[in-house]
Length: 306
Image 1 (cartoon, rainbow, N blue to C red):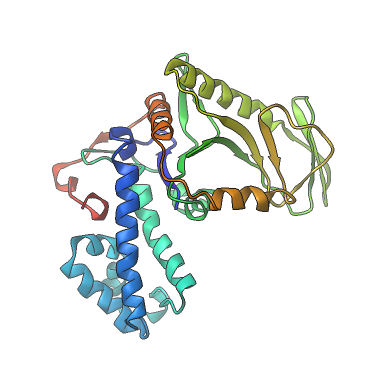
Image 2: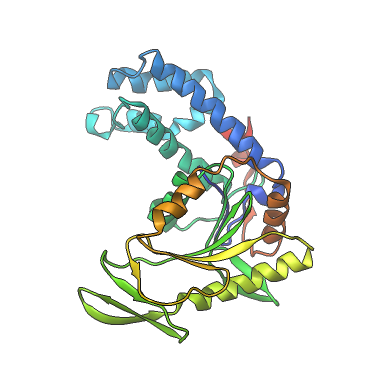
């Protein structure tokens, strides 16, 4: 599960200490996955009511799990008569993994919008954002995601493209979504042409935004004397690219290249790298943050602080 180190202009725990939180997250995530896996292997998930009541009993005994299952406990307390409101009990390892990843999403959002003393007010649109969920759930823990960050460029505030910071480089990503079967025709002009079931259309050339983001990346790497590779990526897994040469340090990832690109990311076995964290730290320093102080009653430890 990739780590969300920056979401828009919200405050992030990773801003506080980029060298602490990524490794802490990986360790705690793995430890708690082992706990859940042990319960599954012992057959403690056969009956739905017993499964959810067991979650609550476990939560009462362990601070971390109390937080982890807080949402499901509230469902049981407020809607006990509606069995359909209960999350289906996992019956396979695959279902268990997805159940666990879905449970971790709120904590990723919390870490990307709060510190122990401050918080930002998140737009609800991100709670159900399919692209955000895709990046977080489909890539390894050693990838650090900056999703729609707001960069500070020469005293101006500019929303830039997504940044996926891996152990060996940065992917500057813009995603294109059009009906399957659409063909994109790249040009060097201000607009690109697309062809599909609705005929021909024009869209804004995505390279314009990617180049602006590249300018930001290059300036930060230069300022901090960091030697770290990057490339620009147009991600369109359902679409095809027509004839056209890819610009320098750019990859057009359409339906024919997507699986290879995705597998390369998924199969990355490298741990977090020091240079990777240094780059992430530098980028975070030059992004806008808007936050307020958390009231004292809200300054509490949670599952990921243990």
